Length: 417
Image (cartoon, rainbow, N blue to C red; front, side):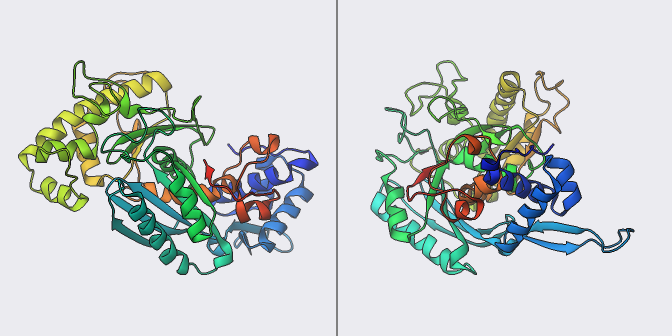
C-alpha cells in the first residue's frame, strides 16, 4: 500500500517524495494510477510529475496497447540518469565502494585492503576510492553524495570501537568529516546493518514490504528492524544489535565484555578464527568459497555449529518482533549463507509458523556481498526515494542537492541516517 499524500501547502516536499516513491515501487505507472494510490488531486499530481520530469528525476512515455479515445495515457518511471551516489562499505580489513544510479544499478565497483586501525591510511584509501568513482559519474552536478556503512554500535563507552569486528583504536567518527572535506561531497553514514536494510527496502528483495528484519552477516553480525519502511533506531540509535545477545551460557568471551554472544559463533570473524585457530586472521571470500567447495572438515564443523545458532536466532527474532520475513544480507558469500540456512532447517516453532515452514520465514538478499555497498549508496538519496512523516514535522539536516530539488534546505554537515 502506498503512503497517502497530505493536502497542506507546506507539505509539497513530502508529496513529491510520495509520488516519487510510487513511481519507484511500480517501475512504470500512469498518472491516474498515482492519483488513485496517493489520494492527491489530479492537478497536484500533474504538477508534481511535471516538476519531477523537468528536473530529470523521472521520464514519461505513452502507454501502448491502451484502447482509449484520443492519446494513450502517460506513464512515468525513474530516470536512471537522474543522479548517481557513491556507497562505501567499511570493514576492519577491507573498504568496498560502488557508483550506483537512481534505480539501484551498480555502475562501477572497487575494493581495497585496509587496516582500519590506521585511520590516516584508511582515510587516504577511501578518498582515493571515492575520487575514482566520482570521476566515472556521467554528471558531476548530479552526484548526490557519499554514503558510508560501518559496523556499530556508535557512542557506547566501552562497547564501540572494540574488538576485531569493529574499528579498534577509533574514538569517534571524525574521519567522516575529513572525508567530506577531502572530496567536497556531502557524506551520510549509518550502521552497516541499517544501511543494508534500507538498500533491500528500496532496491532489493524487500522492496514490496513495509516491514521486515534484516540480518547483516559480515565480519561481525548485526541486525535492523524496518517498520513502515524506516529503520527503528531505539533510544540511542543502536537498536537490534543482535550480534551481542548472549546465547551460550559461560560461552566464549566477547569483545563487548560479555560471554557467549551470538556474533562469537555466527560471523565471518568467528569462521576465520575457528578454521585457522587465530583471532588475527580474516579469510577472504575466495578462500572461504574454496574451502566450502572442498567440504573442508573444519569449515563444515563450523557450519554445523553456526547453523544451530542461526536457528535459535531466527526463533528469538520472530518471537520478539514477528517480522514478515528475515532478510539475510551482508558481505558473506551467498553460497556460505545458503549452506547455513539449509543446515538450519527445520526452523524452530515460533509465532511465524511451525518448524517446517522455512521458505517464507528467511529471504536471502539477491545483492549478497554487495548489499552493504548498495545500502551505503542509498543513504544520500534515502529521504528522496522513501518518504517519511518526519519531513512534515521538521527539516532534516544535510540533504544536499536532493533537498534543493524536492523543496527543502540543506546544511553542510556529515549526516547520520
